[in-house]
Image 1 (tube, rainbow, N blue to C red):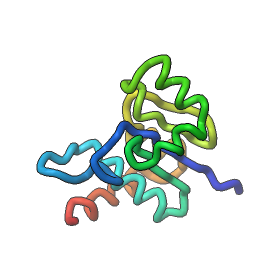
Image 2 (image 1 turned 30 degrees about the vertical axis):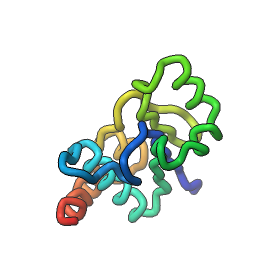
Image 3 (image 1 turned 45 degrees about the horizontal axis):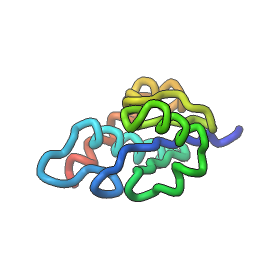
Image 4 (image 1 turned 90 degrees about the horizontal axis):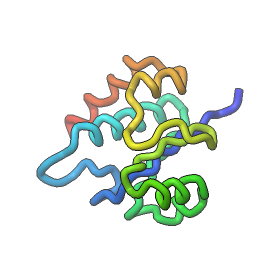
Length: 117
């Protein structure tokens, strides 16, 4: 079985996860938890934010092309196994469940751990 790989290319965030500061975006909280859950299940998932990982963006011409054509609103861009599968918003937990074969309950359950940080 080939290991699938998920990469999410994000707008510039204040820190690695974007889950910091006085007003935490619940969507960033959810995607942080879900990516952790994917990695705990052995699924390769990475987030790259523009301020922390600018070189990662340049490694994928499709990403830089989209940014040049559509601007920053195209971010986040989700790439599954080298193919762009979603732009403009983070994938839902249900979409990630379908793409990875990991139940949405398992992915959603990982958000409890983030809330207690």
